[in-house]
Image (cartoon, rainbow, N blue to C red):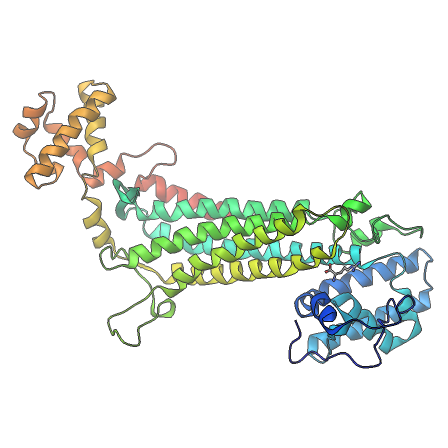
Length: 472
Ligand code: ARG
């Protein structure tokens, strides 16, 4: 796409300066439009220059270019970097991509020696290297942003280790749990998300530079040196794979997709919990919006948009896997379209994580509302069945049946389980005794869930502490 700022082709660039030897005529305007990626991949300028600096230093060390030329090139690249950083650099659509824009400007700045930079490399290994560098950083940024959200959730968990809320399955009242326990469920999911980004960064941390167009090069390059200079664990081991593969991008996108899915679920819960019928939490003014017509409104827009943005990452994964799935080895220009997918997913996730962290940090829980809801829906029926097993020796299936009859009785009377009298209970099953009332309250119910990973407040307080130590 051509932005208004991007300069249009000058008449003098009729044949491309990089392959002008073979070409007599310039491209059609539409060809330039479909071929150019500069509006998207200019975002890789730092990585591109970093790769070129490592490459030219290696070329000089190996005696492939002279020390004098390498010096000019290195200085020139520094000037190009400054121009881009300060916004003075003019990106040109007719120069297609970031690689050629940087190289052409280098030639303007230092003249002939610029032509030596592209020795023993191709844009194919160059772009793979740029993306590998970018992905490594993007994985690190995603991990850090997830850690911040975990921090906000752990703070809430510590505050509300003993705050009772209804636990749901099928969004129907199931058993009482604590709000802190619920917060920590997301800390676990997000911890695995961090692991996925860390894995992707580790596996992708190999340098494709020096694979050249696809077959390697006849120049005596040192790929280990360039890999080391860029902080990679080493060079990739097959030149064809190096320029043809983007699975490190797919791994990043799958990590984004899964993390976005988790964020979307939490967002959905915030939407439900802030509905006045629930009223479990209140979001801050900073993270809600009002209505221009209905003065009472407090809309959870950020949560809704986080829910929507999951589509960006899921779609990006689909987009890139579709680009790759039919491609014969090695490089195909299709692969140029990997970047919009990567950038869109990364941006959507970063924004979603930041907004979710803000919402969770500011969120006020309403323990009274949660508590009132936690007792409803016969949520301690399982405790009653467990009591029959433990105290009266019934097999669980039979206990389940007896409890079911008690629930039906309570339902008919329009009361809760603890409101039934002992006589009414014993009319259903004589093995019921006074002690059963101890387990029908939600506090005792929650307190009794002491099994590893269970919701007992003591467990939750301990788990929050452990999570803080592990993740922050
Ligand atoms: N802009 C291209 C991309 O992002 C760079 C590689 C182009 N290589 C080529 N042989 N045309 O994929």
